[in-house]
Amino acid sequence: MGKYQPTAHPAVKCVACEKMFSPRKPNKNLKYCSNVCKNRYLDGRDKLQLRKCQTCKRTFLPDRVDVYFCGPDCRPSRYKRCYPKVNLPRGTSGAITELYVCAKLMEEGWMVFRNMSPNGVIDLVAIKGDLTRKIEVRSGTIQRTGRKNWTKTRDRVCPSETEIAVYYPSTGELEFFKQENL
Figure (cartoon, helix red, strand yellow):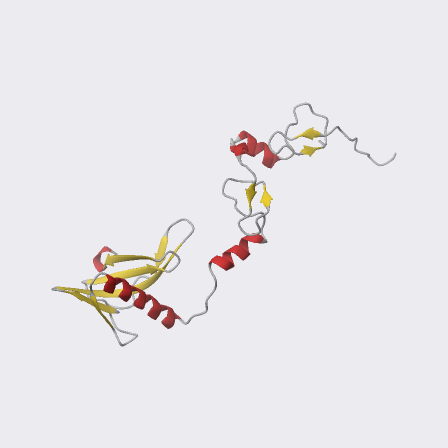
């Protein structure tokens, strides 16, 4: 007995991606070059057009609706370019966040005073006319899902009328919360 030799079948055009392929089995109903193409076509995703990779600008046919990169090599490079890793000490990044909140409040007409101690119960006091705001400043992050995270103040006892200012550096968004709403 000799070795099994697969027989060559005539090339067929894939209905989804329009590439020519040679089926392994002679089958009149074989329309797709792969399960990816079959699923994309049957799910109604066959309308996906060729896209340009957001990093290298090459054109490619995506597997899913939410794919914007041609491969794993392009994903990290774009991530690193958009979100560079800056190794700042926590105290420095906290001071930068406090200064950002100070600037925003001063734009709104508040007089702002910073705490000189790095371990105080509040970071800022803002005064406008008869109004006084005691503010604890936090840096936050936003996940890909849109969920917002920031460190809650549980280790320090803040006055009950303290506001929490959360600054999200990735978007430049600033939110204020009342202490009792947390």
